[in-house]
Each structure stands twice: as structure tokens, then as C-alpha cells.
Length: 329
Image (tube, rainbow, N blue to C red):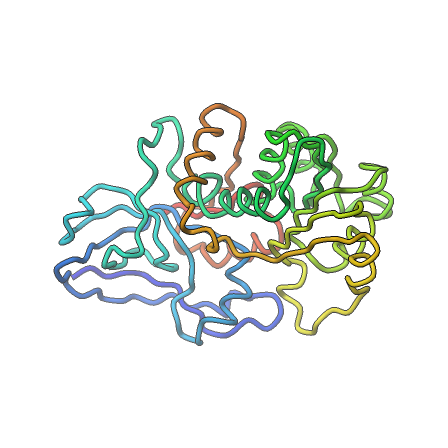
């Protein structure tokens, strides 16, 4: 019998998560049935969505949600061979059993020069989020001016580079000077540290005096209240995340979106990347091609040790990570 270590949600988060909200358990897995495979997690993903969705979808005591790149270590399914790697939504666990329906083998051929952990980041769900959010929601065209916040994160960094491929001027903001320097290194036209500017409104106007055609929003809250007032006529806004709000115990109140949306005739749409599951292969193929060609650069923030999963998760929510947050087993 295989024993798996599992991080569970001991207590629903009240405000910002605490170490005491998690509990590490050991679970004995049953023997495989026909059609099933046993997988061992190799890399686990840390993503902002886990904070609000745990409140929505999990009960106290449930395994924490999340995806991983895992290696097949035993198989009774002819489609999946021992030693192959797959992306799965197995949650925060060292080992798990799957019937194969939720497994996605890595795109082939996978270049030997690329870490397989990219299947959780630039060539995975975050990359696809950037790809479809930018091309389907923002509908960018050459010459557009794009604003993206949390721009050094797993999604934002890909958004900016895809927009440059599409011929846009790109403005990004991040939470440290080191991250700002990285944004300029990977091709952003303008970048600033939102924590150190005297006025966010002035910083946005200075970066693009004529305003913004497109806005890819990962943050929400006050930032978006200010950004919406600088959108050009018929601007397009992709609402991908609202990380500034996830840990609030009380709902924030602020300016409302209706006035700038009416006056500037804006199009603002929220989205979840699973909408385009039927085009997943298309997106991954394009992202992989651009990474291999050097048109999309990546940066991973790797924490080692399964015991450090909660700490890495909380650090990611605070913005401590530089690039895609990943845990290596």
C-alpha cells in the first residue's frame, strides 16, 4: 500500500490565511483498479485562485485544491505508461490515484532544454489564461496600448510578452524594483513599482498620456477604480483576478464602474480559462513555440519540500514570489 501525505484545509480562512488553517495528514491509498493509474507529484502549483475557491468549493477537512506535474509510477490503464508525466488536479498531495480522465499529458515533443514545471506556468494554465484573455477578451490589435497589473506574476508576465508579439505598447506595474527591472528586461515599454509611486493616477498617466486601449486586470480594487478612468473610448478590459480583495473580511467600497464604462463605452468582461478547454491544444502549441523561439521568457520561483506548501502559498498571496510560484517535491 502507498501512503500519501496530504495537506488539508483545517479551518476556512478568516482574512489572510494562517499556518494553523492547514493540517498535514497521511492517507493510505487503495490498490489500483482496472483503468486507474498511481501518480507521484513532482511539482505542485501555487495560484491565487486557491484562496477564494477554497472558500467556495471546500469543506473544512478537505484536501487543498491545486494542480501538479506528476509522474506515473503504476498503471492499469493502457493509455498511460509508467514514467510518463502528466498535469493533473490532484490537490496538495504527494501521491494520488486517477482514472485517467482528468490527466493531460505534456505537449509532445517536450524540449529537453525546458523544465517540465513550465507545464504549470507559462506553458500551462497561467499561460493559457494570458493567451485567451488577451486575444479573446481584450481582442488586441497592433498599435494598442495595454495595461497589465501584477505584471511580473505567472499570468501578467505572459500577457505583456504576448501583447508585444501582437504589436502593442505595454505598460506593467509590479510590487518591487527588482520585478520592475525584470519587466523592462523582457520587453515591457513602461513599468513602475506601484508601492513607491506617489500617485497611482499620475504614474499611469505618465506611462501613457493618451490612455489605454486594453486593460488586463489581475488585481481589482482601488487600482482598477483608477485605471478605468484612464481608458480610451471603446476600451476592452479583461477581468482575470482580484487578488487585492481575496483576503478581505469585509467587502471594500469605492467608486463604481458604471460612469467610466458609459462615458468611454467600455467593454469589461470577467473570464475563467476553462471556457476554452476545447482549444487548449491550440494555446499550448503557440505558447511552446514562442518559448522555444525566445519570444516569451519565463521566471519560476521554486520552493523545495512538501512540508513548506502552506508557507509558500501564503508567500505567494503576499506577492513574495518572483514569477510563477511552484513547489518542488
